[in-house]
Image 1: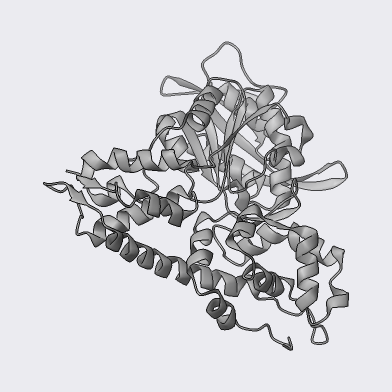
Image 2 (image 1 turned 30 degrees about the vertical axis):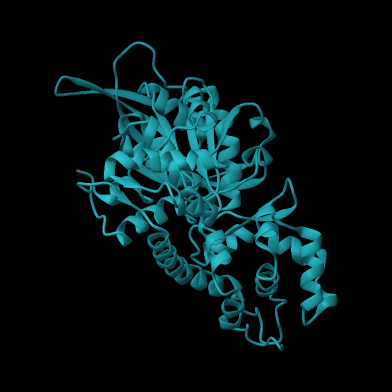
Length: 430
């Protein structure tokens, strides 16, 4: 007997209808066998966490959930803490690297001592014996990738380190981690980075030395046949068949496996299926229409709030009236066809379209667009938009949707009503 939400839907736990895709799962599993970092990327709710849950058990990794306020020191401290490495005492220090001040954490750390090869590496160390066990006390700077690598190697660390929500980190922290990953590789300390973006070589943009040194696993696209395999897996588990409506659902979800899973789940609920049915139940279009209505309501509520936060922009002084580029971007976006939105909005045409409707067209300069695009993800995260909806792809000079539910929302909502209901920024004359 299975519950419907165990078979279909979006969950942090591995769902029963997870299917393996050779181009994704085989690339990932082969990457686990090699001494390389793995970068798993794609839009939100497209299966990044499920991929790691499928092929790794909790004993195989240490996971750090990144946040907008996380520093490299926070991340490295979390790794040490999860490994039960005992920090006896610590204090902050400031060092200068390349002319830039770096805050570190000088710590006395107690680790088990088994004799033989050690990892003193010039650090001060002493050995103590307690209850028949030997421990070594060593000074480390936990903000330095090399110190952490030596520490992990000294305890024979052989797990993967998963950085979840890497995209939440500030750009400076992402750059530092991209540099540190090269150091960790030298010590065979291997990471799995999960991030919401759609372009290749994102980390290599921060550190070109990572080119050919990491294995990249894009979780998109989801092919029609992949999605059909999901309902085929679910058929014997719930005794429900989607045979007559599966193509309609696929057309409605824009290749988003998260949206597809949620519509399947809600369709079952609409058909009265909360758990395994004693008899085969056929899901009808009416059930799917009800499911789409339910999900549109859910997504509309969230995305409307997110758009309101996105366009909000406060003047830095009483004399200043901002350009409100985010507001005009949304107005342009909601006039585009769904096909063009999926392709991505190119920078230069976007600037021209914004100028065409802007209250101060001559002031919309390439530098203003550059600032808006460079801070696109950081601005959303700072406003609590999680996951971010938009990202700027440097390789194609275009804005891409990275929240897979947003396609469903913008295709099914009343666009005119959504834009009309957005609060006009203060001081903006229509």
